[in-house]
Image 1 (cartoon, helix red, strand yellow):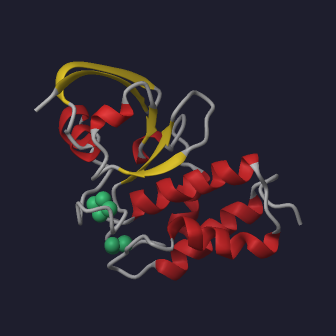
Image 2 (cartoon, rainbow, N blue to C red):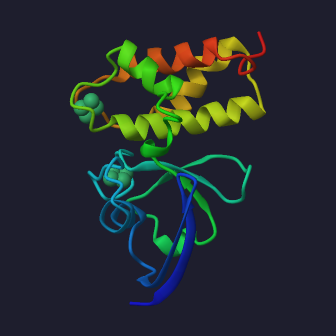
Length: 174
Ligand code: FES
Ligand code: FES
């Protein structure tokens, strides 16, 4: 076990931990060391994507969807992590969260944080590089098409994400 000094930002807060196992998986670090249990764990082998979080390599950089169950914390040194707990601001839900609720996208909710964080990364990509309306369905499929929802909310997740993309100015070109 190689221990490291860890320095990263999670949901706008700095975390510095000395002497931590560099192989510790991000999902375990978030849940056990930081107390952020919104990020879920299921398959543990990078298949179901319930553990997805958003990571920026540098401030203002692209939001990258990352599977926390297979990512060692040593890969996160100096990076910026956003989890589902970081989406709501000043007591206001993120539009994706509101749309998921309005569309009854989830039932048990276990898959919801992963769908939220992957679609959050998609919105970030579209802000930087808008796409034609005709391509929105494919873009959603690319972003969340491999996420597993055992309650089979796929259509309603898709509908909610589509609703947010089409109602947010600047994400589509026509
Ligand atoms: S827990 Fe299934 S991909 Fe991470
Ligand atoms: S809402 Fe239950 S697993 Fe998706």
